Image 1 (cartoon, helix red, strand yellow):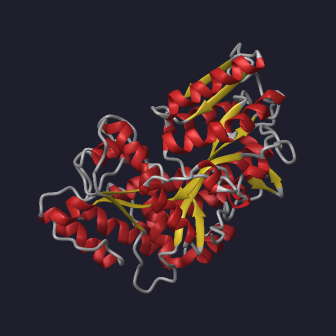
Image 2 (tube, one colour):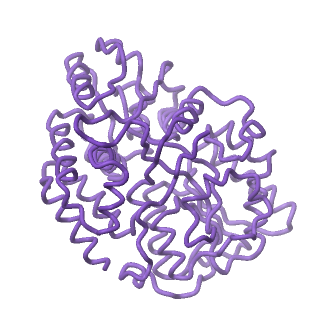
Image 3 (spheres, rainbow, N blue to C red):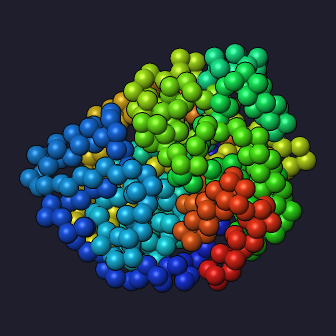
Length: 426
């Protein structure tokens, strides 16, 4: 496999105003829980929710301690972690995507340095550690990694007369028109959650400016290059076609009537989402999902310097509070024990981060294999911007994307908002 280069690009130095706002308070007692260990994760639906509870129960029994396990919905988790970081009252073990958010938590003294502390680290592919490595030190343990692309319902594409997934942006817009003409909702989108929408502006920026252009803009804190305005113009053009389901602006991702469920029930033809999408479609719709689910990379853009082998993506991992007991480290390695991790990979359709994937996933699902194949051909990747950049920047990008999709923010306003947010970080 080629090195997929999962780097938290342009993570700024942590001596920023946002970091200072986190405070240097020491970690507290993990939400005032009386348990020996607290664990916050975002696998808040089965099968993983029950499986992770089983891991915790077994660890409790084997080590004569108690664990407070809290499965939390994605956006709610981000909100709670923001509050926890500001107060210094962190859970012992918590979900992380790495990047700029983790960097700020590290700078505030909230996260334990795991360098040389995990006996199981040799089991993990070093490539997967990159988003969690800051200034040469490891602050998180990954358990899943992948890329964002379009998951599409092949049957609905066929009904609309679309024979091949679109390879260019013009072909993509033509596919949207063909689906609408066939009375099929082209795209499912959780507008209320904001983060799914930011995938579109990010990818358009990547295709127009390339990864190097995006990195240079973040390094300079200046997105005034015409490529970023054009990305907004192209996204606004897409939104004007009304490709999303009715009421998308109030739709969340992971609920019974959310984006994932809409795809799972066959009510929309495609969604731009990460490696977790097929399982989320099944979990939230209560169905087996589309029988024929395909995957294609975000299309190329004429005149842009980016390529379709450059992916937006990242992984899922766990970090440990600075004052967490040693048992937290023991639990992470227990989680990665082959007998446990292989079950998580198989039952949760995770994309394995093991140094030897065959040891934990001798037979991958077709959906997981699609992501593994995409990773194998990747020539570069960009971590999700709302994680790669400091929280204040990522939040503005999410908010500005929402405004752009609703026609409330112009492409020029979008760039101005991002530049102002970067200026405030200096």
